[in-house]
Every structure is written in structure tokens, then in C-alpha cells.
Image (tube, rainbow, N blue to C red):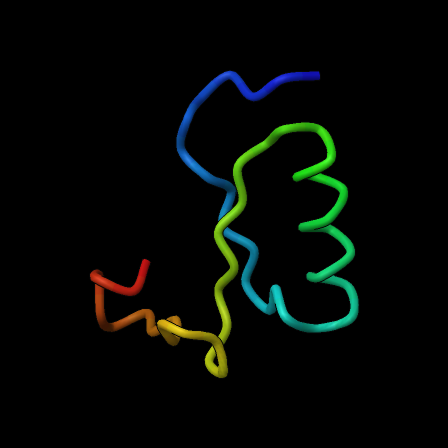
Length: 52
């Protein structure tokens, strides 16, 4: 399976147990991933579009 778009899939909570596993599986299928996490760098914030 290949990605039909070059835009990454946003995984909120991507540094947690489930999110990290999901990201690994998507990346293994060459699907671009963006990790969203309050503790990540840059931190994800719904009110700041730049962090999306």
C-alpha cells in the first residue's frame, strides 16, 4: 500500500504507547506521519495553527 497523498497523517498522542506503534506501522508502509504531542518538539497546540 502506498500513500495517495504526500500530506502526512497526524497522530495525536503519537509519543504514547499506542500512537508510537501506529506511527511505526504507517511509516513501514511508506505513509508519511506527523506526530502530535504536547511534550513533542514542536509541541502540538490546537489553538496554534503553526503547530499543526
